[in-house]
Length: 123
Image 1 (cartoon, rainbow, N blue to C red):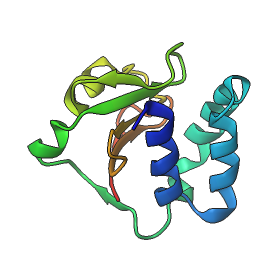
Image 2: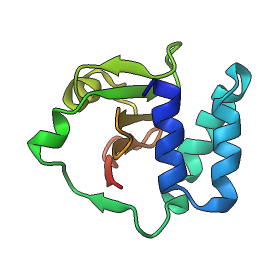
Image 3: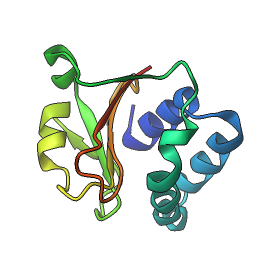
């Protein structure tokens, strides 16, 4: 699955219906991607469906999964990384990023300017 498809699949599984289509519509266009990040960082936590599990940390086998790093400040939309740990290490310390596993079943999210608020998600 490519980066855009992984993020779309994750959003389809994780976000409430009334916001999901808006986010997906934004990420499918170049101009919409910056708006996606603006909305996403400020609203995401309140828009997860109840079945999304937020955990304090992933077991090591999850950190070893291939992943895509999505950052608001990056010109690359969905940088492919050898594993989630590498993506996490490359991510901006100031937040404003999400890492999605290539199978779209796991994600790590850090809201913008919320360095202590890393959220690990399991679908």
